[in-house]
Length: 261
Image (cartoon, rainbow, N blue to C red; front, top):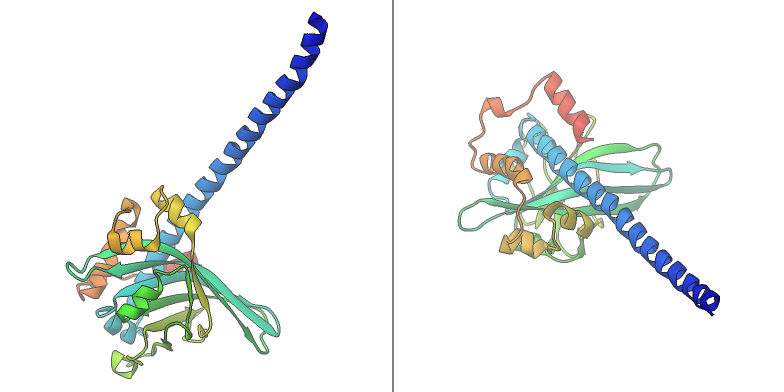
């Protein structure tokens, strides 16, 4: 009789052990994933600061410096990869900060991915730094949705680059003005038709919660001190209070570009 009861207990104990093991595996796998997402998010913010600083200090980005003063939002993509033969695909991750209407402080960042495809003769690949300036309320509002298409849901235009270029030559009717740079080349990446989508995983990991873009950018209910340097630099740039000491030059500029990629 005792032997029968013992045999009955063995399957139950085995099932319990399997259940505990399964839960442990799920939890164990979840921790590294969240940690990796947080690390990726923090590195993206740091690279975004380097890219933005480099754009602001580039003599070919006069129009960019002019337009940032009136921009309502800024999305920074430190590395947008393009490549493939015949069919060209591009994609990258970025952060968005928006300017408060009352105190002009910058909120965010919220995390996004941007990608698209184009057809044509393309050989090899390249990495570009891309910054999108949201110049209208409609441009900012588009980022509050889960995803939207540039050139479809909102108008997008290339920003003028080169020494002597200014905001006067930009398409000021566009909701979003894009600037890009790749290995010393400017403006060559087409974003028309590219899709911008929210990176929920990075938002959750960075803010240790479950924020929506509206929570981060409009309600300001989620903040992370890690991004204060980026927000502060944007505030300086938008108010035209940058000093020469804020710029990088020479070897430091080269290092900035390489780190951003």
